[in-house]
Structures are given as structure tokens and as C-alpha cells.
Image 1 (cartoon, helix red, strand yellow):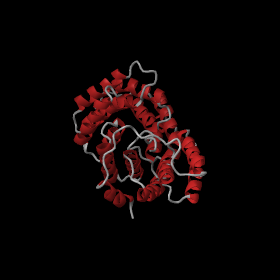
Image 2: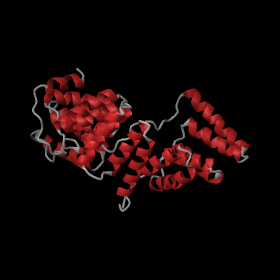
Image 3: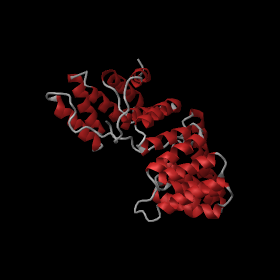
Image 4: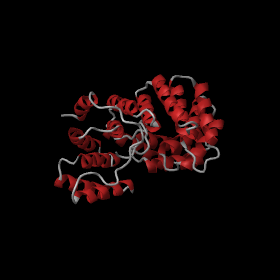
Length: 326
């Protein structure tokens, strides 16, 4: 039976949780020797050692197949390893044994995001926010999914709820900007991006995304000179993001800064070597600079990648780490 069928039955009979964010259990109630093993698996998970954590969780399940906490923990671990289908199978097994929490539903939703099944992700995040409406992170996840579904007005309402729970949250504000841009309200989107930048101007650790978003918007409006410093700042903050390097290189190309464009697009290609589009962009720069041999190499790679349909795409929902399990 699929998880969503099991949970649909459970949801009819369970009362709403009282609201605090779920945390990893320190000592799951599994009894006997398996208790310390599962607690150790939880600690390894919190420390990011997912391989060792998975091994311990599976050992607990082998000894006690009816341990709901072990199945939930393993499902969470597999989600963190981006093994969505396996994670969902564990949540299905766990839901047969014990009612899921709002946190479990949120992680299930993130599995569906990994599978690019955004309608099911929307369903389970909507349930998670209904069960735990004070959890700003769940509202953020739900907003990202609605954005992925192009439901921009609904996404704005969702991010606004997250922002009400965590005022001056930079991430929520620039996501509102993305939604406004999706609706074609470019002036309002620019204001949202600039407000998010204002909110983080004194932060020790700044988010590259609003710099990138504002730079892209300005570039789209043929304001390349204005866009350039924002994209450069984004590249400084997140130097290993190929989308940032690609857009920066394209702006530098527009401004006839060809050596800089070449450098940034070379970095982009090194970070996303299976992107046909990046090889094509770099080939164009080589061509403009009279580097015909290098240009041909890039165009040939572009053609080869297009034939194998292995192009990488940046058009995905980017989410932070999953919420902690249970």
C-alpha cells in the first residue's frame, strides 16, 4: 500500500499536535539492546554521518522489524541521502506501525520534491502546516512547492505566513520577490529583493540568492551595468554555483568584458560539465575572442550532450536541509 493511502486513513482519526518543532529522539523507545543502537543512529544522523547511521538503523530493523521509530529514522536518513523512493518505502512501513508527526509528513513531502512530484509534495506540506501551523520552515517549504507549481499568488500568501512567524526573514522576502516576478510585477519584485538585501546588510553570513535574483531581474530589464555588481557579489558568496557564474559571464559578455566572461563561464562549465547550454555559451565567448580550436571543442561537446539528452538544469526547487526527524 502506498504511503499516501496509509496516511490518508490515519489523518481522519488523529488529533492535531500541540506545536513544537519535532526533534530527533535521544533514546527511542524500542526496548532492550536496540535502544542504544537506535540512539547512536540518531546521533550519527545529527552529525551528518548518514552511511553509518543507515547501517545502524537497518541493524535495529533487522532485529525488530516492528520498530516504528527505526523505520521513521531510516526514512529520514534516506531522504538526507536523496534516496527518495527508498525513503518513502520506510515511511510507508513506519506509518503502518505508528501515527506520523507533522515533521514526518514534511519529510515525505521533500521526498516527493526530490521525485519532482510537486502536487503530492503540496498535499503533504499542506497537512504538515495544518498540524503544526507555528512552524515557519514548513510554510517556507510549502511556498517553494507552490512556486514550483507556478501558483505564484498562493506562494506569496504562504511565504507571508512564514514571514509573520519569523519577521525580517531574508529567505521568505526574496521568495516573495520571485513570486512577484513570476506574476510580472517587476517593480514590486525589485523592491522585495532590495528589502531582503537591506535586512541582511549587517549579517556576518549573507545569502547569495537575493543578490543573484536582483541581478537577473536588472539584466532582464536591460540594466546590465546595474546588474553586474550584484552578480559579482553573489559569485563571491556562492562561488561554486554554476547558475551564478553563467549569468555573470553572460552579463560580462553583454558589457564586452570578454576575458572576465570567459573566466566565469569556464568556472561554470567546470562546476556543471554536463550542461550543453554552458558549453555553447563558452564556445561563443571563445569564438568572439578568436580562439577557434577551443570554440569548436565546446560546440562539439554541446552537440554530443544534446544527443544524449544529459543536459543539467537549474530549474528545480532548491530547499535547505530537511527538518530534523521526529
